[in-house]
Image (tube, rainbow, N blue to C red; front, side, top):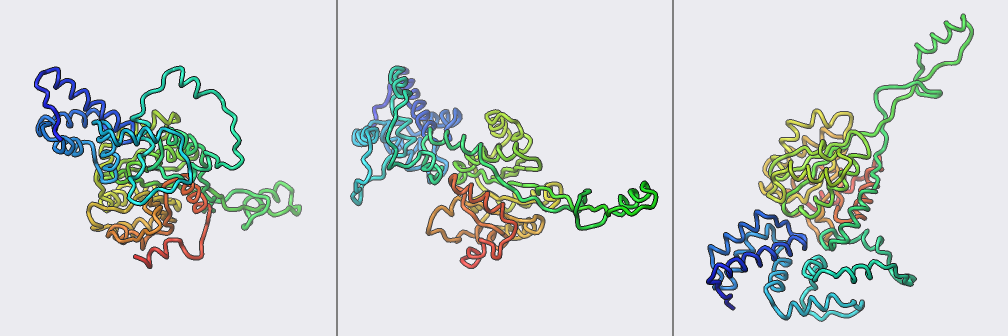
Length: 410
């Protein structure tokens, strides 16, 4: 199929306007498409021409897609936006009430993502929007609570409205850290050591009369929490959602430090301490220059061990590493840096979104290099996994660390 070549200036402007609207659809559907990519797409189309539909599609795909997971969404959006009648009919069917329990025959195409349907749906009129906002009473005796459904839903498959609800729920999550005994002591009614100075002072003021012993006990304080979060292309969707969680725990307690890494290491603790979450996220976006790029886990951990470990990992800090373990450097030097990081902290907890798959196996070289030095190996892909993380942090000790089974598999 060939596309008509615009011969006039008006036709070229019309094509540029359509490409801009297509970029808006992709951005509304969840793809990271900004003004720079729109300009690059216009240059790419001008370079390859629009005589062949396949060349036109590949030119847009090379600009708008950053990782393989985004390709199905782009393909569906391209076919719908550039007028494929069959897929347009499927989109309209998805907007109708869904009947649950229907058997989907084998070979049928996968349903369109919810956020793509929302991005391509026409905007509602003010009258329809007001009618939707009216309160409706329904019998929910045999239905699931929307909040309960969102607990186990993957961040990757959520619609725009669901993501907004989950962000509000994440902001209210509590991350309990156990209070640990410190070397310093404080006065107490009952303790483990006699406070000799206070006892002699009391006896002197009592003119030699017998006085009860004064006691001291060790102070208890929550350990520091250091978060190392991967912001590479494969972690983009999850890291953006987890930023709201990291903002909540940074403002909830002291001694929480957050660093992002992709191809370089960036400390964003100062930006996350702003109480306004929108301002904090905007400052983080401006400070990070390698978002949704490659991953150099070994080099970033080496920089952390060299520049930040001594000042952040004091007093038995807990390190939370958020990454899928897919290293662009194929694990070069990663084992050495993980060993040094594990020796410098009290506990090392690895959160990996790939654990959401039942058939996950630690085959990549980066994952195999990291697993021997991990105390906890947990998934992080929905709200339920964040609650499991809270339970793991509340545990002070375990007979066998959960990462032991994965070490054997590696």
